[in-house]
Image 1 (spheres, rainbow, N blue to C red):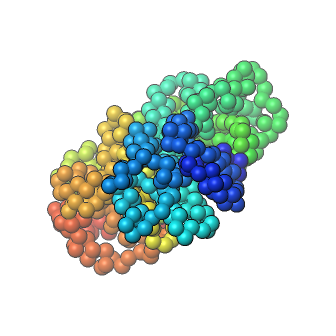
Image 2 (image 1 turned 90 degrees about the vertical axis):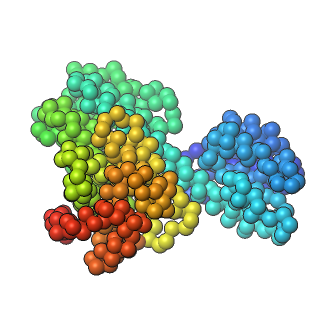
Image 3 (image 1 turned 60 degrees about the vertical axis):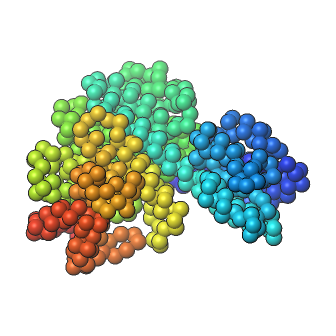
Length: 500
């Protein structure tokens, strides 16, 4: 997998201070900072108005180091109008803000921290270079994590949006062109002119040759009568033989094999190496493309294909967090059993079974450093982790299909607790959707019963004791009773889809 790019755009750091000497001092210190081999672009402004103009024109600014004397403040309650402007008017929640001032017992930084979205404080009293460097690096890491989340969320929303379009297309050429456009939108997430900067094509393997289907950029003029260059043809054949995707510094090749053994290849030229997040997004999109190709040629029912995509997306989210491969299958079957036993129809129970594998799809947007951390998460890391429920909901809610709507509800509410202490909204009792209450029990039971990167599997008696203790607290007490009344069937599912 590719790592963070060395040729990434510079991270912008904005210094806002009235003192020229303060600017000079900070720039000298920041010149020594190394952050993931990404260059830093340090900009000086000397007033709030200058800073406002810069942020408006550069919303991707990573960090603002703000001298308190530059801000119009109310001496009684320190109303920092400028920070309110950035967060609430410009709606910029990503840029990190360090406030630099003289903080004392009578003028504590904690007062400001509680009221304003300020990320770090530098005290001019007893100031040293190490404190400044540590604060800057901490904020840059947080900015990068937030940027990764936003990029993943944006890409995953694009994938969800494209899925229904793929299934509606009945022509292989139209489907291929739409696939290339959607793939380009993932590769160039932050560039609206992707169709002008992309060069790629899709081809089908016919006997010993490749038949061109459609292309973008410099390959748009090719036709089925034109031959693909010998050099590219050789690479395509190597990929075909390996039957797996290939990612290189200046291009990548995607391989598809349909259920009736038709083979397709996408060749895509790129200006620089792809990030690991972009590759993850491409792999998810490829799952949808494969399903669409199968639907086109095998005329499978759309609902069956959707089910496969949902399970695959669920498994990918679990695989990224290095969790058990059958976790989503077991959660799906446990959820259906509980749904049937609490009186839902077979159709409704099947909806829950097909939708529940998407409960943690939002984790695809969580950075690996947090998702796979073996030790306890910090409060800030846990707050980032908790965003996965809302991210999953935002990705799934736009579909009008009942299955996807159910998946969106489950993604959003499966971490709510019956007594109102869960997240993201702290819903209580019956205010939590039944789908969320059912999936919560299924997910927690299987999670405790499975080995994870940060823990060993619990003993069964310990798990059952927790479920009883949490009845009416974490879990719906009626569903807990149903769980224990049907425990033999739960164990049957557990053994049927064992990881061993």
